[in-house]
Amino acid sequence: TIPAGLVLRSVGYKGIPLDGVPYDKRRGTIPNDQGRVKDPESGVPIRGEYVVGWAKRGPSGVIGTNKPDAVETVQMMLADLPNVEPAPQPDPTAIDALLEERRLNFVTVEGWRILDQLEVAKGETQGRPRVKFTRIHEMLAVLRAEIHLKNVDE
Image (cartoon, rainbow, N blue to C red; front, side, top):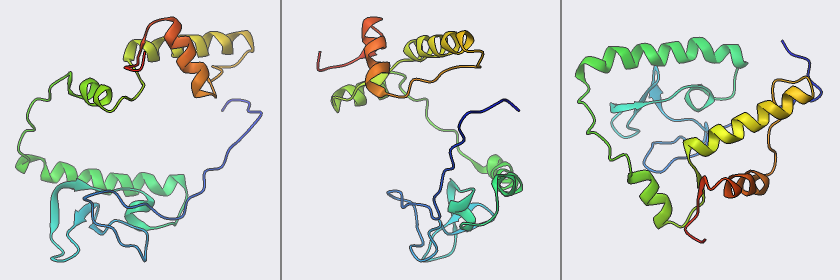
């Protein structure tokens, strides 16, 4: 444990729909069988789709409840693994191109490393593991100064 000056509680009692993924509005869950996402019409598991946590079972239990729940889903994934077709090798530049096409700011791995180092350094001065940036504009300003933010607007 570490001393804490603030604890935030995250509350949410139902999953949210995702495009292309079955969703039970009444229960706020993704229909599944032991973590395998099911087609709501046929009840047949959808190949390669899995779910865990409250999106799997609804709002019950605590963080510790998620562990055995996740183990069950991972066991299904491992059981299905021999029948999974390998995914095509992704184009490593595709995500950058998509983000630039949509004119979105994004942080590179190098930029994240800079933020990480700065947060840890600031934490050391206060006897803490780190002090997180809490404002996006501050993070982006630091990264712009270091030329690690790719921004098509500039």
